[in-house]
Length: 610
Image (cartoon, rainbow, N blue to C red; front, top):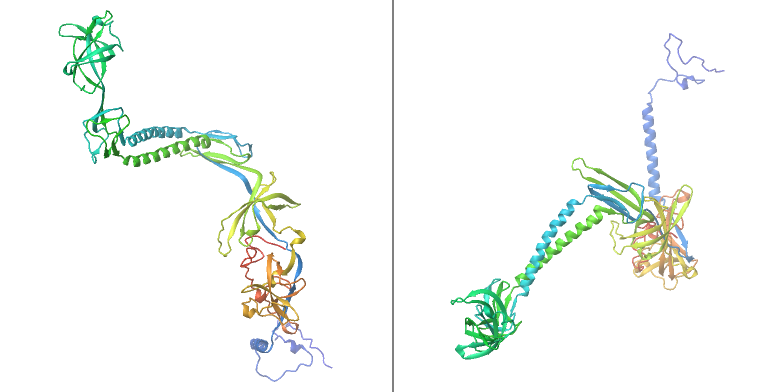
């Protein structure tokens, strides 16, 4: 009987013993013949090589001799109402807020952070003395501009030189084409319908002569005796050569047409006793009125309408001057006046608003503070006021969904807290008409929702919104619905791959009609359909298909003999969101704004859920 070797594994203390292997320790072991020693590293290398050869052989076999099976994933048409909604989230901002920037020297400060203010409450007052000085300087400049403007207007009005009274033109000194300056003498205008002269009478007749008294005028050269009138009396101190002291009497007499300037005349009048009173001296006749006509503007004479000794009426145009250069100057001065007036108005407004600041809104002061710059001595800061009765959120809606929205729509807005969900009434108050292009190729439109929070929401809070875009007609809105991933496109529109025992009426051949899906199981036929609205799950079928029809959605590949799936054209199980032909989205470019050329579960940050 064999027994187990009981020799210890470790040597007796003090001895050096060789260590035995597990095989040597087993019963019945006999030492064999000495031979080659087998390396452990070589064994491991051989095992790895064998594994690689086996795996490669299996792969080649599967590649050339085993084919995966394809399983057709199907769906079905249903009947019901398409539920359409746009959902998303946003961060609240006050619908009405204002921020005032403080810059200057603060004289008075009335608010602190956290105060509640009403529209019209005084917030602060700044020193406006420098602005007031600027206003005075601009007003002086403006006054000078007004004077220039008035002068230019007068020059423009003086392009036509007219007669100021009826008379006769003499000594015309200009002709057409002359360039004249303001003040250039053009002619003389005289009124010779009446002639006048001044004679002297002795002071002894001072009480006998009065204004308006009739007087006899004698013109010896023409042997004329005419009746005139005393028009003026002046008590001067004139002494004749004979030593008689006299006063001056001016009289006028109507010109019969022969009287000229310088004609000698004498006169007498009847005294209170009926005796004639004679002038102490003779006089010379002069025109009753005479005027030198001058140019009142500078420019070229374009018209000379009179000649010497021509009789003219009051207001008649005598000369015309081209003073168009004044028009350019006038327009320039007008602009300067307008600019100065605007500057003054702006500064006056700034004193009334920026330097004496009143709140424009009712709300809460969320920030109010200022500090003084030690270097400049100027104060700077700001006051920020929020009216939190109404809050806003702003978002972008893509072009595929913008047709579903219009300003004034009611919106469901809610906020989820740790213990509750709070709902707030809200309205779509703004929808931009201008699209903004994005890098994805889908344009977006900015929109704003106003929330009637009545102070229950703060700024910067995240809320969620839900906009119902369905027609809300109840039963009238029910139609045949098909999974949206069953919809295919061809040259003339859309089609579904419908299971049928025989080809339905109107069925098409997708390979001939430019169909997006041409690989599908036997027993399915391409049936053209008319589509309506859609959401991310279903599309309305208005005609071409009935409720309860089986539809081909996609192929799914599976491993042979019940093995694991090796490839999958879609990402979901039957009825999921995979698309025919390997997950390609159908082209919705012809669906009249209801469907776009690209769709997904989230479009522009918004979901349209069924």
